[in-house]
Length: 375
Image (spheres, one colour):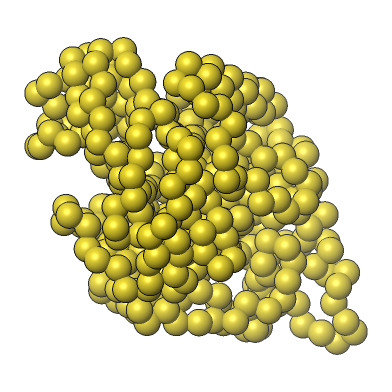
């Protein structure tokens, strides 16, 4: 067993901040993860959008935590990302002199109508042509890099255990603790060979062999494809730029919290309005001002279930008001009114844009445009 503390050593490779546009997003209707073109998951909060981060390298490249799969060969000639058509399943492609490799990332959909701790990220590494060696590093930093954790080897993987959260990482390639609070693996794949990684809230793997892992992955992948494509069939839009409209609808759905129907303003916190500036806010909440446009968009496109659920959530906020109590401009995805704003001074911020904030003091402001946007 390896024990880590808040003080973590630097990674063997120098980590830098990617441009925001170099991230793709995956999710399960409870939370999301941001995946960079370099194969690194740099933002992931469990079990909900506004929960503490497990991977937060987006806000501190050294201390924040990440889960990266990348070719060992350098330099990589090009990185590209795309989604499988009509889904939120992300494919990251690496081109090197030795071959072409891909990492497919997605989160199995959680349609639970109440909060759940069952969340996971599935990652499949595939060599399209040639032969490639890969390096995998998974180095969580629980509770915005404030909590210590242990790394426990188990069959086919490791378990990361912090005071309030436990995650298991399982793989078809051997994993080992890296002595820095994480796990690593080095492996080589030939043409059309695969490796699989599963990060989830479990202490033991569901499958025990490479063959079983491949079958299970393909089954969950097919189920996830079917979910997104069947959902998108509800869309009534048939005009120009249909693919762009579809992608926007898929993004809105990813930002929807299934248990309540609330839509968050953003999946992240503290990304700066200007690099190096201080206007860095937590937007993982729901603004009534935004609700009018969101509801209009969902309804016009034909997503009546989502529009109705969000409408019910908004109406519930008004019904919970006491006499003469002003309506506040924003709430948590569960409808809570208290969003205390806290500064995380131990984090550097995206490209040294401090401070890093969680919570949002604007919840207690009086914003008169709320009524105009809604009514």
